[in-house]
Length: 545
Image (cartoon, rainbow, N blue to C red; front, side):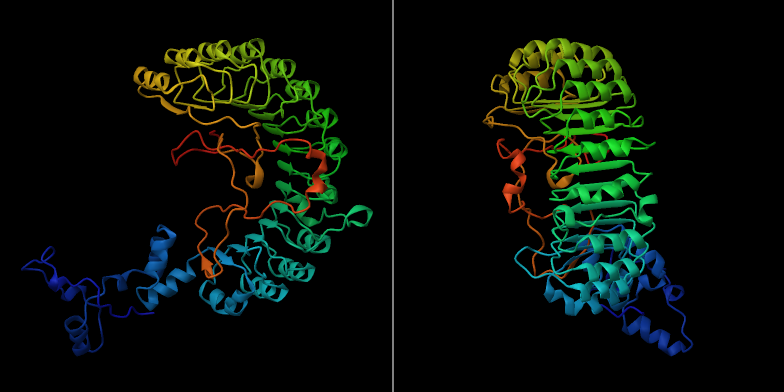
């Protein structure tokens, strides 16, 4: 483990910056039994100052570096190479079949990995059950695992994973081919599982032959369940119903009628605090069921055409702790003033409101501005009724507002000018695709309020429709964003065997190939838009837009 000499190491004798006439280096030299050997080390070889740093301290130093710097440091010497590998806890692998032969050497070096991501490109053949079994044997302490595009992994591989990695706390899979048996094996063995995310799991049978999934022993520990783009997401019903400590439920673009499941969940005492429903067959019946969640704080309702003011009013009247509300009405005009006024009267704790494809009037906005005194983040997008009077009302009444986004509305310079004196706590305003707003008023507003960040895209062409789809990212808790999503994010190159997972990664899967399976929504124009942070600072919390 001793550090080998380096041709580029620092030499005290060659440095004028640190040279001192009275400096005695003998006390810095390592002690050797043979005094002659000590002289040889210090005279014939350059002094290694890092040899006195314990491995544990060196590991802490490496953990504070970026991924690239860690890789470069690992090439300095054998000791640094070993310490860097043993102290790395996060790892991402290109999970193509070519990597299988290198797995023993990879996990011999990285023997302390607790968070692992395995991704395979759609054009490549992924690792199989044997490779996953080997990984599970080498990573007994694995707590987080993400599988993307690993189509060669079957129920057998999942059985081995569940048996060998019982400490898993977070599991996420997308575009995989194993079925209900493999998922049940995981739920029956991983008693510490807290977060489960399943996307495009294609090994589950359709129709009446589908095997129920859950609840298993993991049901008692699960706190978050996310189901995305599943033909038969109803199979997870027993798991969702049996998870009595569930706090977060996200069901995105899954087929089937979900009203009955929501009713069953809320028949008993529950502790749900966050619910996301996107492009689902859910009606006011389901929203009435959600209104029986007394602890609900966050609700995202995106493109659910069967939902109306009645369901929104029921939630507002019964869920008094509601803090964040996102509604994409898909321009159906079924959610409007009646529902918004109910929210204004009952949701006094509301701090974040996003309305897309909803047409509020000055009456509902006045009620919202007057009663929701804690409102800090507001986004209004694609509204046909939002004009200068409504914007002026917001500027005059929303005194706590900090961040505002207006997109695709009939607002002009006159409405924006109201923020020169209104909303005293406003720190950022974003205006996009509003043809009546010019760069001149943006410059004028910046001059009047130098501390206010004004973001204006006056020259963009408004699309035919707006979309609040949460897409692959699931919940949009981190911000309101509006540029188009580029579908099919690129995954790692097949040439890269391993890479450090320094930050949460996004899914790289594409759209479902069989679009007819989602015929429920085929009559709508789906223009992909999403939310981007209004706050550009790295310190933005999950509560920021």
